[in-house]
Image 1 (cartoon, rainbow, N blue to C red):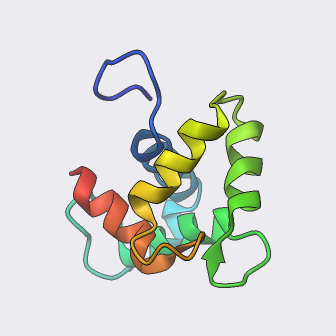
Image 2: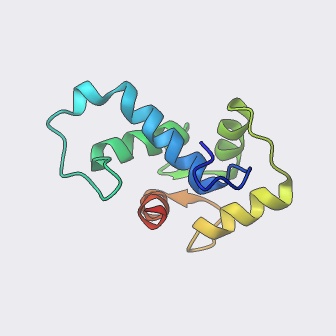
Image 3: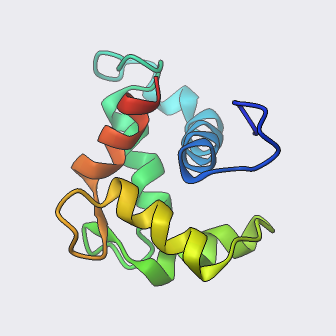
Length: 110
């Protein structure tokens, strides 16, 4: 999970891991999926991973939803670290992560 080997799991690494985890569990249903993105996940797989985070189906990942997933995985980060990670991917600074920002995060990581 610690891709860059710095001893910490940053948001990009966390999101990538979650996206691959969700996509791997349902890959059979997406054999005929749309063209793959640069990181090997189809648009359908990216949407499925995004929906895993977006528990209330609002079309964006709220801070509460992101915290719940992070806590469920046992990742410990401070409030300052959380806000910094959110700010890094929340390009429109609305306090939530929409699908485009989620995909942008994964695309920029690779």
